[in-house]
Image (tube, rainbow, N blue to C red):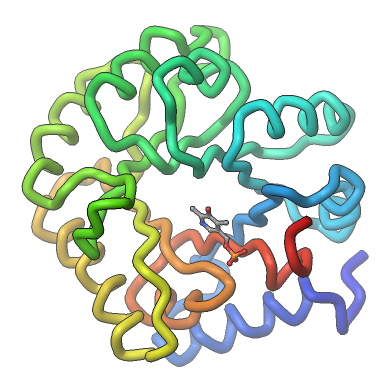
Length: 225
Ligand SMILES: *Cc1c(COP(=O)(O)O)cnc(C)c1O
C-alpha cells in the first residue's frame, strides 16, 4: 500500500501536477525508479507500494540485486554507460535499455539478446547539451543510428533519452528537454514514440516538454550510499 505521505505518493502528486500544467494526463507519464547505490531492501519496499519499473546504472550491482529480488516481478531498465564487454549481460538481464549510443553496442545487444525474451526495448541516448564528457549520440549522427537499429531483429527501438547538464533554472531545463522533443518530431519515425527525460531535480520541466518516462532516484529513495 502507498502511504499518503510516502515519497512515492508525493512524487505521484508532483508528476500529476506537472502533467496537468502541461495539459497532459498523469497516466501518460511513467515513473522509473532509479535504484543505483540503493539497497535491495529499499527497492523491495517501493515494489510493495506498487512501483514496478526500476533502473540500474552498473551491471555487476544490478545482477547482484536482481538475484536477491528474483521472487518479485520487476521490470528492469538499464540507464548506465554501456561498455562493450557488458552487452551480453545487459541483453540477457534487462527488459529496457535507455542508453544505446553507437552502432557497435546496438549490434551486440541484438545478437546477444536471448530469443526467448523477445526483442530488447531500446532508447537512443542523445547528447543534447554537446558536452564532450557525456555519453550519447550527437544529433547529427542520430538518423544513421536509428536506421541501423530499426533493422536489428533483436531490438525494438522505442524512443530517445537524454541527461542534460543540471541547471537550477526552469527555462534552461526546458530548453534542453525541448531539443530532444524537437529532434524526435523532426525524425518523424513512429518507432521513436517515447521520450525518457527528467530526474529528481528537473522532472517537472521534462514533463512540460513532453517526457513519457521520468527517471527518479534521490527524490524516491533519499541520498545514495
Ligand atoms: C542517477 C540517474 C538518474 C536519477 O537521478 P536522481 O537525481 O537521483 O533522480 C536518472 N537518470 C540517469 C541516467 C541516472 O544516471
